[in-house]
Image (cartoon, rainbow, N blue to C red; front, top):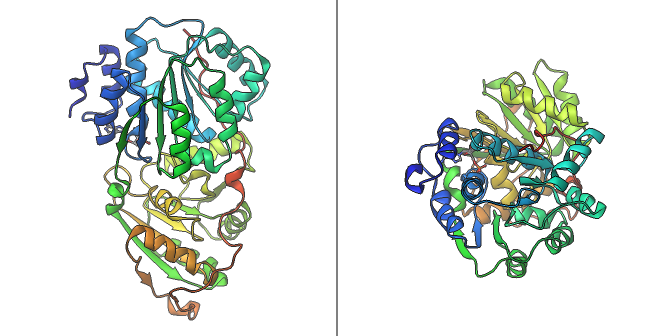
Length: 413
Ligand code: AMP
């Protein structure tokens, strides 16, 4: 379906064209008409499906076609991480480039200057505000946030927000909003807690489901069954063996990221790390270098597993097994974006075997196990039903709000 079928405002159509979009993706085709009709929507769609534009486009169009209160926030988009806030703000800037619609991203860890800009936008009015929950609460507590004319609420990656413990913060923000508004909720998964939350927030929503696995077909998945001590030599071997465009290595803890980065920096590889301990400028710089291709290998915590949009990643390595199937799908989904092919390699240590088997059950297939190259010795046997260590897996970064990052442009009318 062509975007022209939506009859968007011509200034918005220019932004769509300049962004290089021609046909609407399935989630856009389903969600956009519902939002334009004024319906509440609950959509299960993960990153990569085009879900961001599915809510931004109708919001921008409505803002352009309806006179809203200039001195209030019109649309509030709540997201789990600052990285996602920045990414949505960038999408927003691209799509609304030829319009007068203003937007600002509000997230924790900024400096005083950022706070002043945020305060100005939140108290004097901005069309679209993209925020993380904690930072918005901080502003609300100061008493100047103007929600009186708010018309739209979007909760993006709602499952992730609940995983990160933001339920109470979200409900506190919603309590500060006018009751009459249009609500959109996006979530990669729909566990019962999301449905319960949706019942409290949405009114008679239309429900949209976009299948998870579409983007996975282009990804070649394989795994190595290893002893923990074999992981570092094997990762070095893989990285030196073949020319990959860009490589993203996921570790489940900051400590593992730091240790692996130290090890790989000793080789000749252009490698760096990203996790929540880094300062804002540093994280921004590292991501920029990686996106530009100058940095070949980026080692990251799960902070980068969702919502981050970097093309050209040829290989994802799970240095350890992700927490669950959803995290696995998100991590490997960083490769084979756009039309490219990609490879995802997972290292499974002895204590991670059971966890990986439950991921394979969720995927509905077994991931092929490669034999470890001889020089590294024998690996352990892959034993079905093997008991895993009770405390392995996910580090603690998911429960913590991430560190500093960069700021989007201030709102301006
Ligand atoms: P998202 O699922 O929102 O993270 O979007 C994934 C990627 O698809 C982003 O790089 C978008 O810019 C891109 N995208 C979104 N909608 C379209 C479209 N209709 N045509 C082409 N690319 C799109």
